[in-house]
Length: 121
Ligand code: FES
Image 1 (cartoon, rainbow, N blue to C red):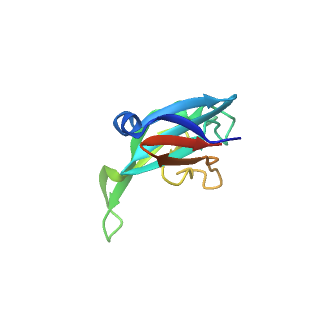
Image 2 (tube, protein in one colour):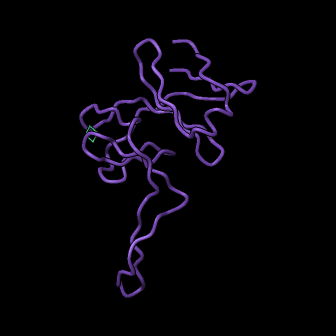
């Protein structure tokens, strides 16, 4: 399939996420910390529309050297997308599931050329 012009990069930078369909292939494009990422909109669990899920920062438990918990905090560096069907979370930068490590989103090629986001699926 050929590369397809999606939108101005500035539009995706301000929106943070856009799900598109090109010849029946759905892909989610994300902008995070200055980089673009694109994943096929099909969850490896049971095929749910994973890219249409909500996005949340990774939740971490704060544990000291004595293995005592001091509650939870959001990790500002790691953003996950949550599949709307069963709640599996995926790291937007790597596509890896944060729970079931064997699950991974299928990547699509995305880049910016002359200020336009280009997708090659
Ligand atoms: S289909 Fe995505 S978590 Fe089940």
